[in-house]
Amino acid sequence: MPTYSYKCPRCSEKLEIVHGMRAGYHAPVCENCKVIMRRDLQADMPNAGGRRYGSGFVSESLAISPLQTAEHKQNFPDVDVRGDGCLVFKDTQQHAKYLDKIGWDKRPSKKRKKKKVACKSH
Figure 1 (cartoon, rainbow, N blue to C red):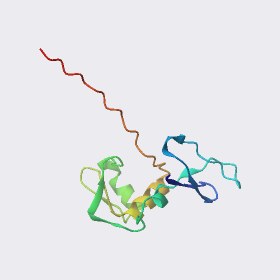
Figure 2: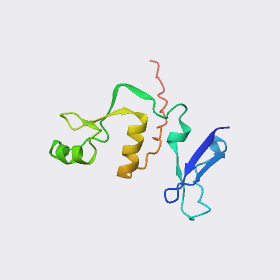
Figure 3: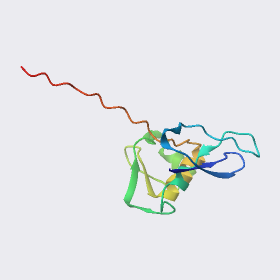
Figure 4: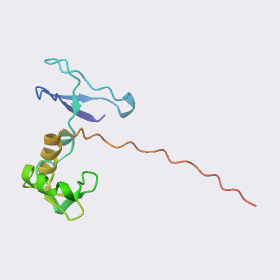
């Protein structure tokens, strides 16, 4: 069974839970703060601490307006911005720190079920 890591957004308390994938998603509550804990995806990724992206990771989902580039460079001087507003991260730590600083709650994407198409023979 997989191990899931959780972290309290208020006091940074960490917790690991082992349960089956079909058990459903029920985030635990922090014993100290009584706040719902968030999945710590950084801890769940093996060898993620500081792994370098080949030539940089371009994030289209975090793109900004070109008009915001100057302000963004002021707030995040270590994150490159392409001309089209896409952000470029050097490694996983930089990406994780950026997401944490902007308050982004990174959750795994939901996979859609593929529809079966019946072929009709003539």
